[in-house]
Amino acid sequence: MTIEETEKEICEEFELFEDDWEGKYEHLIELGKKLPLIDPAYKVTEKLIKGCQSQVWLHSENMDNKIRYTADSDAIITKGLVALLIRVLSNHTAEEIVQAKLSFIDKIGLKEHLSPTRSNGLLNMVKQMKLDAVALTTNPNA
Image (cartoon, rainbow, N blue to C red; front, side):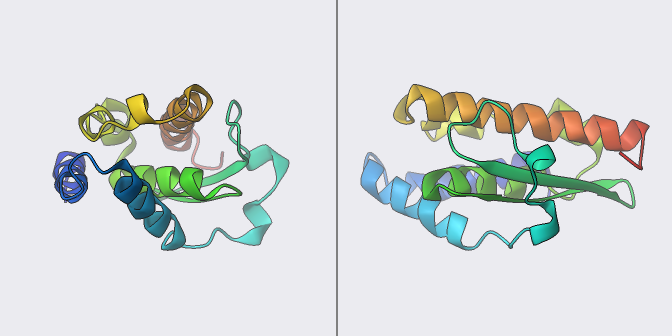
């Protein structure tokens, strides 16, 4: 499935809730609960995403030229946000990840319904995932 197809799928899921933001937040929480657990060895300071209000650990690896992500957070909404990003970006090439527009973020209204600090954290997660993808492609041992 392409990044765009996954984004479309997410938009369709969130459309089911129309303007019910409580339902959308509950859906985010459920997505966070389904996030595959990150190996505890990666829950270290070096893996924390800078600029997030909550603690978010992100591990990235290059497997057969596809970038795979695992993550965790100490906040349930943030865990749901990183789960969405992983769903969209994981298992794609670095080029696809870097070029991804991630328009679903605006389409489902995330930016306008998140607190400014959480919205900033979301942008920092995206930035780190893209930076990791490039780093792993140029230096596979990064």
